[in-house]
Image 1: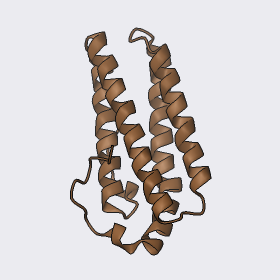
Image 2: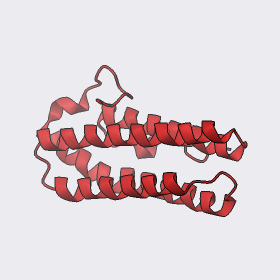
Image 3: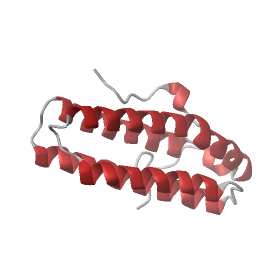
Image 4: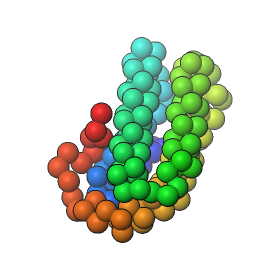
Length: 148
């Protein structure tokens, strides 16, 4: 059963950001499935590294948009990104496929953080950005692949 699933209620109204969020959840779910199915450790570690890399690129993309549109809560939003990135790197360093309870804690944290961040912080950001930079509300080429 999928743990990380895109739902329309996660939509923030900026097509490129929504596509990136959907892709982020798909990567997270693929990584969760690999762990749950007992995939080889190197495959699991590669999946986690890909998830972290994509998350960093997505955060950088959002931060570029916030700067471009002069988002007044940029520092607070970026601090949330920085905290998740640090927590993800801590999980990566401590990750052991056989530590089932610790892995469950990690998956719960990641799911809660992502869904709450999208529903709250990203939605507030998108409302502001949509008004300040209305061109962001139109579909853009390359949706789902953050600028790296």
